[in-house]
Figure 1: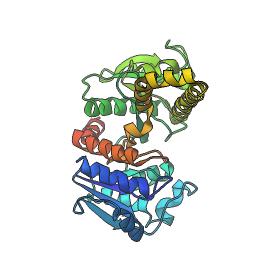
Figure 2 (figure 1 turned 135 degrees about the vertical axis):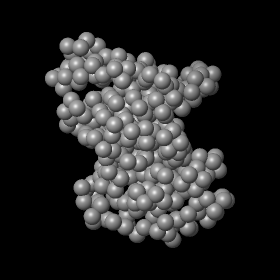
Figure 3 (figure 1 turned 45 degrees about the horizontal axis):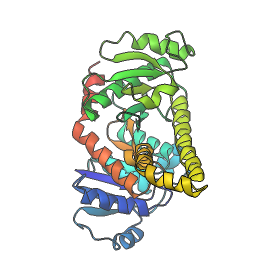
Figure 4 (figure 1 turned 180 degrees about the vertical axis):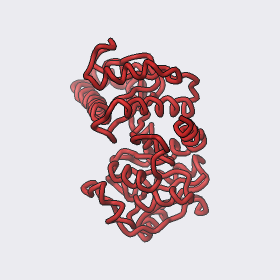
Length: 331
């Protein structure tokens, strides 16, 4: 299995991408990694490490997509960028999946243009593996579509259900709609319309609405929402997690009694930090496309890149994309 990595996507590129690629190879998440970007810089960085040189290949690309670049024009104006070239490798079958921690909008645009939508899928979405009290769950959309019609959310539910089945090996994943109340009458017109439509699908195990306060409990397997709501929810959870740890650090530094308590409580804090650490969960799948494009956080470290490769490889092995094609093209 070959995974292409946009080596100049993250905030600290290419250092996390290079180290993450080497870690992924050493842990045998895939057979080969194609690092796409400025050749001289990548070669110099790779020289710092000991690794199997047969399993990491540099693919030259002279341009870099920045966070300020317009996603709509990247494919035309920066054809030789590391992001566009990495997606191209996947499109041409030279890579089985592609990973980027760069501009999410540009990655979506390049993937949509290069890979195309699965037939009958109206819009792709960003499907995130979300940490919960139980096992990680899937939330979609978390940012690709801020304005949706009911049919979009219905398709997100179908895609999310299939993804959960083949990625987590769940026979009948529980699907819920993120809303302001559990009752079917709650929410805006979009939510109520989607609730009614999902209730009538026998091939989706729809269990009703879920409120934001229940998200972290992990009581359902797939949570569906539009990209605006999903992104606000995601950024809020990330911010709360950081704030909690910052407040804990302040309190634990106040006196020697608190410091002793901190030492005794360290295993619990370490477990919680790992549970909420986004780098543990790799990246999010741009779902609904003819391929496996993975977007990672811009602040990704080497561990996050490594785990994004792990996620990409697992999706490829699961056969999810082919199953999704068969499902939607057969409808």
